[in-house]
Image (cartoon, rainbow, N blue to C red; front, side):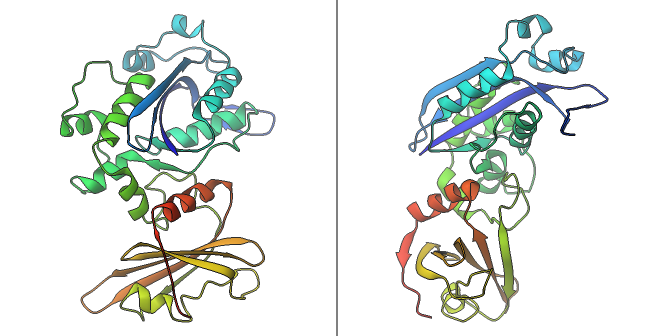
Length: 302
């Protein structure tokens, strides 16, 4: 599996344009840049393209000042459909997006929907800015890419706010911390700070304060992986130990499901166990595959 580090630049005006389907184009993408990393975090390829705007054809002065992109530069750009077709082929079939901040993927999705381009290839993605925060100062701040570069002793030899340069710089920052541990340790229940388009198909969530360990919870009726449709115990269940505080199980009944069990201390004497059941779909399948590949299969007696 590869990591595709994505960065984009975009332009907009007010009022926002709306297409025949009622979809509002909030920002129009004018440049796409990406760096592809292998599992050893080495940059193995890059992608860069300017997109000729179809809606917001006047580039705001502040966008030009920030990015250096002018209307003349974009006049020789390609149509967004051609760029996205080439980008999708370049990404390949087995990858996860990493972005610096939570905005790029929603903007990408909005542009694809507005221009009638399929979104069904967009995989699960993570916000590298949040992963960097957790593994460094952990102050809950949204650190700039420039700050992260300084922290990682990366020289700023190319202009920032160029999509390709920012993607390469982000990839180099990511190579300086543990991407896999950051993804595995992220709490998929807590909002969108790690960059999901949305919390995908969380069919059922339950909380208990009765168990002091993840094993105790897993071996109880509470931890039993059950179908959210009919309530029966899932069939062909396989448990995986992600770490000392997280277990996942997969199985099937009325559909294919993944059950995630986490346990954490919330006070001196109290522990919180959260059990969430997900219908496995195209987006979150990559995430659960990622966890299982890095987890240890284990037996739970119920």
